Length: 142
Image 1 (cartoon, one colour):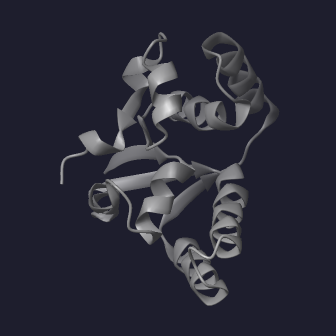
Image 2 (cartoon, rainbow, N blue to C red; image 1 turned 45 degrees about the vertical axis):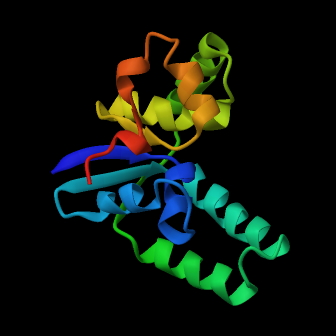
Image 3 (cartoon, rainbow, N blue to C red; image 1 turned 30 degrees about the vertical axis):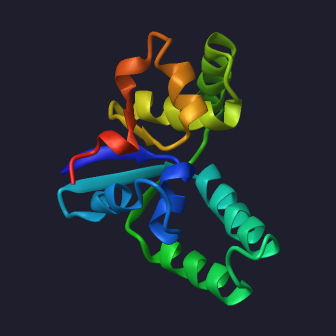
């Protein structure tokens, strides 16, 4: 299996028709093993809530998206202090948010790429020594 850490910006595309949604959905092929830090679950829940508040999703759709996400075969890794510390170091080094760097920290620790659909984060990391750790969702092979 090919391992990937996926961030929340990619997971949203599994449930909402957005640019690159079809490519994001290809990550559910059996050849991939998807990993997320435990923070992912709070972030995705908040995205569904936010979309319901903005009436992009109904409450029932947001709850359904949550249930489908929980049923997805995502390997959740606990955020221990060393992973959080590395996320802080990465954020300070790259000028990005600690929350986003938590996914990068996990990818580095797991020795696998991080797939993102967050253009701002992607562009910042592409200017850093960690550029080879990152995959843009639009560059995935369908």
